[in-house]
Image (cartoon, rainbow, N blue to C red):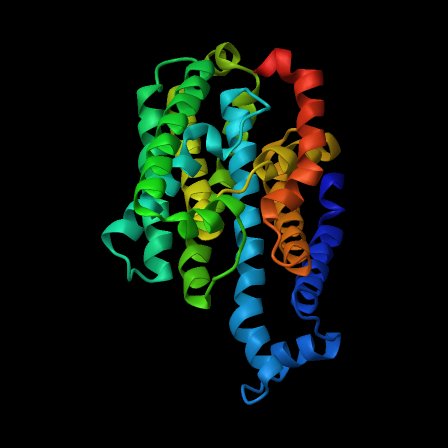
Length: 323
């Protein structure tokens, strides 16, 4: 077995530890025994068990799942676009999901949460795939510029609708980010799709490795680079769309985690996909826990405390090469 798999049990233990901590700490604090009782000896007549099982457990699992998807999506986008500053928002996924949720709130005010999530997923997918199809025969720079330009347009339309129809309450959640309001049914819907998409990416890990060498090298090795770029970008868009629909706009996570993992484990995707997903899950669930502890501070503010200095570092050291 490759030595790079040796830290995997430690990372898995980190997932378990972060899950337990996130279950314990938040707006209210619960003991370790209470958390274990909910998992192994649930009593729905106990109020603390009800809160932990019906509110906190879905939120923690949703945060783990969303962090997993956003981070892997960011990794794939950086590899395929050859730009280390890429993250899901570069394809307009966040902006598309944002606008779709606002439109759903206007057209169907009584839409349940799963409907809101579905509308965000559809909006992110449509915009992401549109930008992808529009730039499929062009360089990665065209992809980045198209994503930035269309995102600005969609955010402007969203702001107009929010101001006109007084929908600030919808935008507050979406722009702040966070796993509040999750349900086990939402997670049960998203989880199997996410697992299938990540498994496909693992099967395509060698093709992603080849893409890292650049277009000319990929062609010389006989790779159908256009096909694999479209397939992997589509998978990344799907992961990001589901995550954004679940937890709103989450910044820096898709940028920060892949860089940390690549510095530790190199660039081979059979390792980085796994470690990036697990590390992203840990960082996001702990950030969501801290947000609860500080009176529901926006999760983006917590992540930005970590991500902004790293973002500045990337721009300073590598921005001229990749931007």
